[in-house]
Image (cartoon, rainbow, N blue to C red; front, side, top):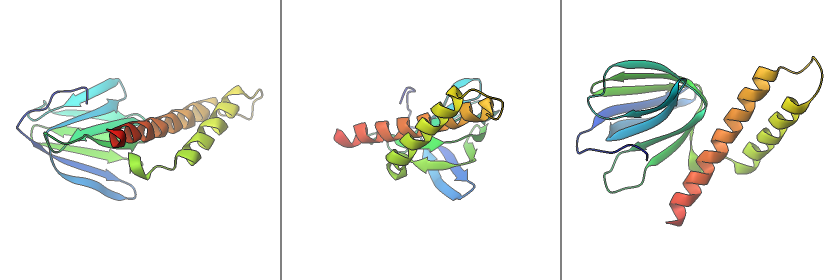
Length: 147
Protein backbone atom coordinates (compact mmCIF):
# COMPACT_ATOMS: atom_id res chain seq x y z
CA UNK A 1 0.00 0.00 0.00
CA UNK A 2 1.30 3.42 -0.88
CA UNK A 3 0.01 5.00 2.33
CA UNK A 4 1.25 4.51 5.85
CA UNK A 5 -0.79 2.80 8.51
CA UNK A 6 -1.26 3.63 12.17
CA UNK A 7 -2.46 1.76 15.23
CA UNK A 8 -5.75 3.66 15.01
CA UNK A 9 -8.63 2.39 12.92
CA UNK A 10 -11.81 3.60 11.27
CA UNK A 11 -14.99 1.77 10.34
CA UNK A 12 -14.85 0.81 6.64
CA UNK A 13 -17.95 -0.30 4.76
CA UNK A 14 -17.63 -1.41 1.14
CA UNK A 15 -20.91 -2.13 -0.62
CA UNK A 16 -21.65 -2.87 -4.26
CA UNK A 17 -24.90 -3.32 -6.15
CA UNK A 18 -24.47 -7.07 -5.58
CA UNK A 19 -24.22 -6.64 -1.80
CA UNK A 20 -21.73 -5.90 0.98
CA UNK A 21 -18.08 -6.86 0.45
CA UNK A 22 -16.53 -5.68 3.68
CA UNK A 23 -17.61 -4.14 6.95
CA UNK A 24 -15.07 -3.78 9.72
CA UNK A 25 -12.14 -1.87 11.14
CA UNK A 26 -9.36 -0.72 8.83
CA UNK A 27 -6.08 1.10 9.37
CA UNK A 28 -5.85 2.63 5.89
CA UNK A 29 -7.52 2.74 2.48
CA UNK A 30 -6.08 3.67 -0.92
CA UNK A 31 -8.58 4.19 -3.73
CA UNK A 32 -8.80 5.93 -7.12
CA UNK A 33 -10.85 9.10 -6.90
CA UNK A 34 -12.00 10.90 -10.01
CA UNK A 35 -9.35 13.59 -9.49
CA UNK A 36 -6.53 11.28 -8.40
CA UNK A 37 -5.42 8.71 -5.88
CA UNK A 38 -6.76 9.04 -2.35
CA UNK A 39 -5.12 7.81 0.83
CA UNK A 40 -7.47 7.59 3.79
CA UNK A 41 -6.39 7.09 7.40
CA UNK A 42 -8.21 7.46 10.72
CA UNK A 43 -9.27 11.04 11.41
CA UNK A 44 -9.30 12.06 7.74
CA UNK A 45 -11.20 15.24 6.95
CA UNK A 46 -14.73 14.74 5.64
CA UNK A 47 -14.76 14.09 1.91
CA UNK A 48 -17.19 13.06 -0.79
CA UNK A 49 -15.71 11.89 -4.09
CA UNK A 50 -16.63 9.93 -7.16
CA UNK A 51 -14.54 6.81 -7.67
CA UNK A 52 -13.10 5.86 -11.04
CA UNK A 53 -12.39 2.28 -12.13
CA UNK A 54 -9.34 1.01 -10.33
CA UNK A 55 -7.87 -1.03 -7.55
CA UNK A 56 -8.63 -0.30 -3.92
CA UNK A 57 -6.32 -1.46 -1.14
CA UNK A 58 -7.17 -1.53 2.52
CA UNK A 59 -5.38 -2.82 5.57
CA UNK A 60 -7.19 -4.52 8.44
CA UNK A 61 -4.17 -6.07 10.14
CA UNK A 62 -0.92 -4.18 10.74
CA UNK A 63 1.14 -7.31 10.09
CA UNK A 64 -1.00 -8.77 7.31
CA UNK A 65 -1.26 -8.21 3.59
CA UNK A 66 -3.45 -5.55 2.05
CA UNK A 67 -6.90 -6.53 0.92
CA UNK A 68 -7.15 -5.93 -2.83
CA UNK A 69 -10.41 -5.08 -4.58
CA UNK A 70 -11.42 -4.10 -8.08
CA UNK A 71 -13.84 -1.16 -8.02
CA UNK A 72 -15.66 -0.23 -11.25
CA UNK A 73 -16.67 3.20 -10.02
CA UNK A 74 -19.01 4.70 -7.47
CA UNK A 75 -18.97 7.10 -4.54
CA UNK A 76 -16.63 7.46 -1.56
CA UNK A 77 -17.79 9.15 1.63
CA UNK A 78 -15.23 9.87 4.34
CA UNK A 79 -16.01 10.94 7.89
CA UNK A 80 -13.35 11.03 10.64
CA UNK A 81 -14.23 7.57 11.97
CA UNK A 82 -16.36 6.11 9.15
CA UNK A 83 -15.55 5.50 5.49
CA UNK A 84 -18.15 4.20 3.07
CA UNK A 85 -17.48 2.99 -0.47
CA UNK A 86 -20.62 2.66 -2.58
CA UNK A 87 -19.33 0.81 -5.62
CA UNK A 88 -21.15 0.13 -8.85
CA UNK A 89 -19.31 -3.20 -8.97
CA UNK A 90 -16.61 -4.47 -6.64
CA UNK A 91 -14.77 -7.78 -6.53
CA UNK A 92 -11.92 -9.28 -4.58
CA UNK A 93 -8.88 -9.72 -6.82
CA UNK A 94 -8.93 -13.47 -6.24
CA UNK A 95 -12.50 -13.68 -7.60
CA UNK A 96 -11.83 -12.04 -10.97
CA UNK A 97 -11.81 -14.27 -14.05
CA UNK A 98 -8.52 -13.27 -15.70
CA UNK A 99 -9.40 -14.76 -19.10
CA UNK A 100 -12.70 -12.89 -19.16
CA UNK A 101 -10.99 -9.62 -18.19
CA UNK A 102 -8.43 -10.11 -20.96
CA UNK A 103 -11.22 -10.72 -23.47
CA UNK A 104 -13.00 -7.55 -22.30
CA UNK A 105 -9.74 -5.62 -22.74
CA UNK A 106 -9.29 -6.96 -26.28
CA UNK A 107 -12.89 -6.13 -27.21
CA UNK A 108 -12.59 -2.60 -25.83
CA UNK A 109 -9.32 -2.02 -27.69
CA UNK A 110 -10.94 -3.24 -30.93
CA UNK A 111 -13.88 -0.86 -30.43
CA UNK A 112 -11.53 2.06 -29.80
CA UNK A 113 -9.60 1.29 -32.98
CA UNK A 114 -12.70 0.86 -35.18
CA UNK A 115 -13.49 3.51 -37.72
CA UNK A 116 -17.06 4.72 -38.11
CA UNK A 117 -19.88 6.52 -36.40
CA UNK A 118 -21.49 3.53 -34.73
CA UNK A 119 -18.80 3.33 -32.02
CA UNK A 120 -19.34 5.05 -28.70
CA UNK A 121 -15.73 6.06 -28.07
CA UNK A 122 -16.32 7.19 -24.48
CA UNK A 123 -17.99 3.89 -23.59
CA UNK A 124 -15.17 1.92 -25.22
CA UNK A 125 -12.63 3.91 -23.18
CA UNK A 126 -14.57 3.21 -19.97
CA UNK A 127 -14.78 -0.50 -20.83
CA UNK A 128 -11.02 -0.54 -21.40
CA UNK A 129 -10.35 1.22 -18.08
CA UNK A 130 -12.52 -1.31 -16.23
CA UNK A 131 -10.83 -4.29 -17.89
CA UNK A 132 -7.36 -2.89 -17.17
CA UNK A 133 -8.29 -2.29 -13.52
CA UNK A 134 -9.54 -5.87 -13.21
CA UNK A 135 -6.31 -7.20 -14.67
CA UNK A 136 -4.28 -5.02 -12.29
CA UNK A 137 -6.23 -6.42 -9.32
CA UNK A 138 -5.54 -9.96 -10.55
CA UNK A 139 -1.83 -9.18 -11.00
CA UNK A 140 -1.47 -7.67 -7.53
CA UNK A 141 -3.34 -10.56 -5.92
CA UNK A 142 -1.11 -13.09 -7.68
CA UNK A 143 2.04 -11.24 -6.56
CA UNK A 144 0.76 -11.21 -3.01
CA UNK A 145 0.13 -14.96 -3.06
CA UNK A 146 3.68 -15.67 -4.29
CA UNK A 147 5.26 -14.00 -1.27
